[in-house]
Length: 255
Image 1 (cartoon, rainbow, N blue to C red):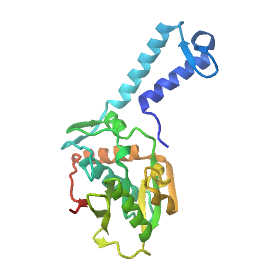
Image 2: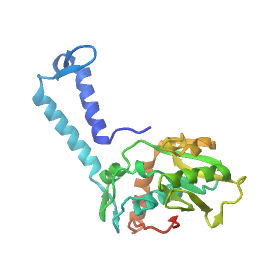
Image 3: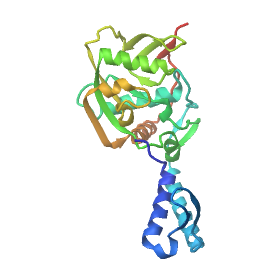
Image 4: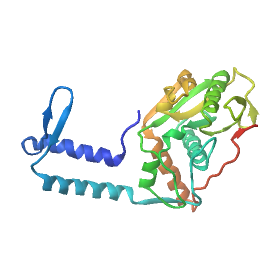
């Protein structure tokens, strides 16, 4: 399920703790009827609250500021494919394999889940939190060839999503024409494919209903997609590499 960003979460926790530990001083007063709230007041302790919030924001900034890597190019997002979408899907495919006892064929995430872009230059923890603000976790499942075709049809119908391990050809109107998994055409609907995605999409959300049909489901609730991306970028940096991605025709529009 999608969650609030780290900054908003920390601020919310601070306000709740104030109300719990200092109810007489900080508990808000509410004026209004049963349906519409007219006003909310917290008149006492404003100086203390501001000081506490300032310390909280400083703590958040200290967490977000460390540099984890560097981007060689701007990683933007747009459809049908984009550098940021391709990077996210490729990193997901490579990292998911570490958590799977069997070969992972495909990785899929959604453009809507990428909430920002990465600019050329240093990448900080905060940058990745901006791109991946949700607590979506790693999920793996198995689809038949028929179900995968349905999924690719759904991806084509919305103009493209972030995919890795396969290629799609579609019309400008969003009609699916062909699918290749690796270099092999998807022509055997009985063949089974292992797919890495997020727990949110694995439920069939964001118009990817075919993912809800998957079997042999594994959800790693302690492994977020954000953690995967941070680890992937850090390992690139440790190897002296920068983050780079480009459009390579994995989703092609055939006129």
